[in-house]
Amino acid sequence: MDTDLWVLAGPSAIVGECPTWDPASNRLYWVDIKGHQVHAFDPIRETTKTHDVGQFVGALAVRASGGLVLALHHGFYSMDLENGNLNLIAHVEEDPEIRFNDGKCDPAGRFWAGTMSITGKAHQGKLYCLDTDGSVRVALFITTARTVHDIEAPIMDPLEGRLFCLSEAGMGMPLYYFQC
Image (cartoon, rainbow, N blue to C red; front, side, top):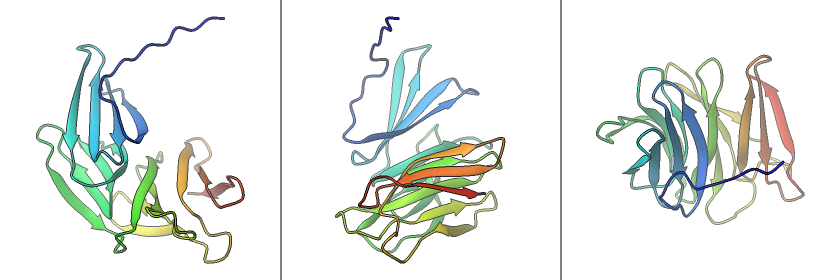
């Protein structure tokens, strides 16, 4: 079976991540981590709106209340899609060499996002959970040789309430799994 592929959205990315479809707005959102940008593609109009957030942006999720939640360099922010304004929800990382890398929402509305070292330093990754009330907790950080280096590709199992994510932990890509 042949499949035709074509480019739908124009802006190129330095490091494109976190494609997220919003059925309510019929928009495809994604981030350019190193380009500090959030993109919103409208397939009906075939246009893309770009917001420069001024810092690393590792992940996003659509908020039920409108706008987006973003995992920026050192914390979680809400973003107004009309004007691009950012509001800090929680500051979570102090180390300038750590940034958020990837994340997803679970069926309960919690936003799970992982961090990594910008310089490639080992044993730096953590998995954070931003709860619907704005509280944040570290959900995964093992302080041994098996420490998470960075969090990649978190996937939620909505039927069983499980989170799966990969981590580049030196020797391959172990799969982490836990009940949310």
